[in-house]
Image (cartoon, rainbow, N blue to C red; front, side):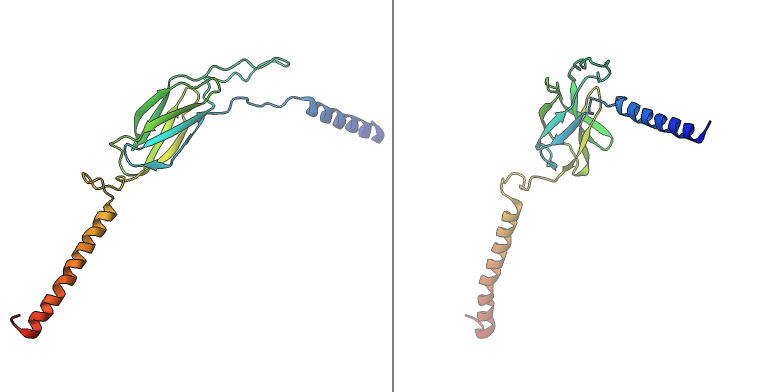
Length: 181
């Protein structure tokens, strides 16, 4: 083989490879995994959290022949919304995805949830179980049985003690100056 023949064979081979590479369809999955988002990052026990779910499909029909449309994938049903903390899961609600593969669910943080950030809300579906962290805060800021904010009651208590001490100071001075007044 001459040098010109080698160069010609290499050039034609390179052009053929580039043309074929451009015509070969690339693989692409049409089904995104499920995902959830929460309207708030947490709250006290018994607080309401709104869970938004997307891409809840029952399986994934992303394999089809050239020129054929994909077969519609059925929606996911019986999705369990769970509160998870310390290795335990509690089902808060069960929902079905809509025709657009989404759902919205209002759930309540369990009254027995322990304060701290080691908790999450998850949506357990047939095609995955996405979760989002949720922080359980302490009490809502009210003293039990009063309905009033704790800082206002504490401030009123300190103010009362301060006034009582100020009223007593002049009486002590009189006694120390004049004896029996």
